[in-house]
Amino acid sequence: MLDPSNWRDALREPAYPSHLLQICQDDDMLAAGAGYFVAEGLRQGQAVILTGTQVHLAGIRGVLRRLGIDPEAAERNEQLFVGDAHEAVRAVMVNNLPDRARFEAIASEAILKARSDPRYRGVRWWGEMSNIFHQLGKKEAVALDERIGDDICRKHNVALLCSFQIDRLDASSYDGAMQTLCQHHEHVMPAADDSRERTAVNRAIEDVIGAVEGRKLESLTAWKPPQCHMEPWQVLLLWVRDTMPERFPAVMSAARAYTG
Image (cartoon, rainbow, N blue to C red; front, side, top):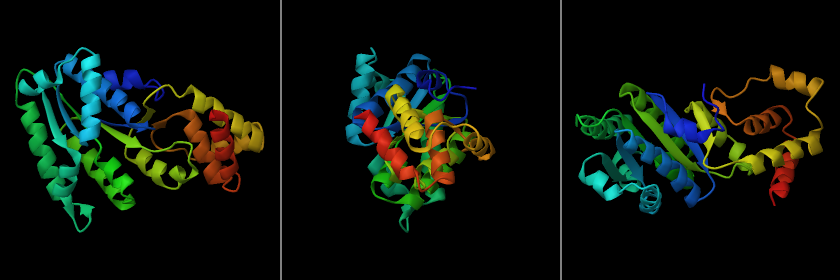
């Protein structure tokens, strides 16, 4: 089983099918993670589909060039397929929510086209439609989008990577958003080294609730963790939120202070 903190391994050799998620703090982190995922797919002779905003697509193209890959040539060779996420959102929406039939029809057409060329084996898909819904405050649309996307990647045996911009040291991020994301992805990974955050959270928990031993350790052991592979320090934050909600804001405040 892949270690969720070893994000480069997870993005270099994803399982088929699989549904991965990278949590990103900013545009550069998003482009770095998605660009690496795309570059490895292209190098391994796979077809790759991108569904992103113009800003993020430009960032990914920049990363590909720095990694020695010509994205325009890959598009001309019909190995790389690029689509606008805002256009995709408009195309699938019915009554302010993603429509399953529309979503599946559009995605299936794109995947089958990418798979039709015998020069390439396997299909990778990177997208951020749920990220757009999140930025718009559409929580129900985020969950539905991820559920449909998960079904599609398994139906078509695709490795799907979603990028999601969220502050992992903001208490409000754990008010349902992180749990929803974990529910629909096997791996929830950082887009860069997270050692500073890990140290900050561990110190904050020690300061606010003390060492995780004795009854606290019993509580952690008995608590039901998220059903996905998430970084241990994020699992600890969810445990604190679920079992000691009155101390959770203080833990988050201390962790943010430690990251400076």
